[in-house]
Length: 427
Image 1 (cartoon, rainbow, N blue to C red):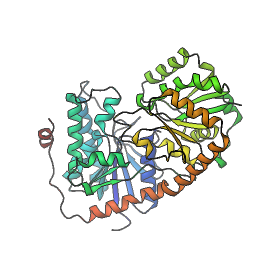
Image 2: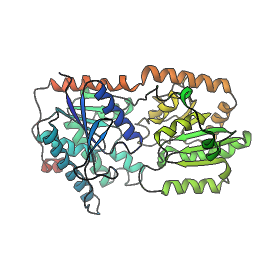
Image 3: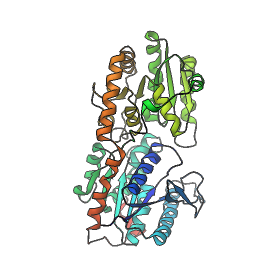
Image 4: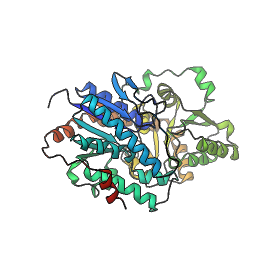
């Protein structure tokens, strides 16, 4: 194994789009480059502002873009066209760059075309699961659990999982879930989310006074949410808890930082309507999506950071990245007790939990922390120490090298697979 091992990462999207997915991806490829590997990237046509054939360099790493194309406006046909288009682009990049390993990152709309391209060229294939497409689609209202579309999505995901030479998950809960769907459970690894604790250091962040005024938090005690807007994130629940909080702590302000992952503003509009219906307009600020650098100011302003996820098929199996940033900033963290979140927090030591979906319990926990400066400080300090010891990106990313080394030692690579074979295993 030499230091010039070239790894082709196939992604749904990447920086400069800012979201949890792209931040993790950017950290992986940047630290792999720093650790002596040679990462390159292909993104799907879902990357904003993609132009066919364009190569964009981010942090010195080549990102090959897949341009938009005419898509059938019908389910299944649309996804099939997306995957065919991405497979063609991946094959072009393999021809041009000659990677040693193909490393695809979920969803399966990325994983399947990357698998087909890897097998065509006889390359080892790593599939990284950050969420299961079938579960995410149910949670986002795209189809119902156990419907024909659900079974199709699950069948495609299982097909890729069984044929991957290695499977990576982001947490233990997800690892246990996919273990029954792979050919060899010993080829399933956990590479969790991480953070650059040096970059997220509250002592180095100076919040401009005009930003405090713009966000209407000057002189207030601040409860903050930072992240994307999805129905399962529990933002409506957080807003619902505010009247009870304000009844005992009227000087409290709720700061909601972020927006929807896509172009739709329906979720934002529903949340704003909820704020209006509860007459909370003077106590809640929606900042909208902000540059990643400004996120640090939001954490620095916050007295408490809340991650109020609801219990769904997705949240039971996945861990978000944003809580780790809050912990690195030394902020006291309040999370719901869904399984994925509990992997990040030790109750009463590095954070506090409340029963998922219980607005009254959330209000009580927030009031307890707002009334106890010493507890807030202790939780934040211990959380920062834990992140520094267990969740630093360089240490986490270094785990990939062992996975790649094991693949490089394989002598048997599966034969190429065809679209027809895919059709036969999806019922």
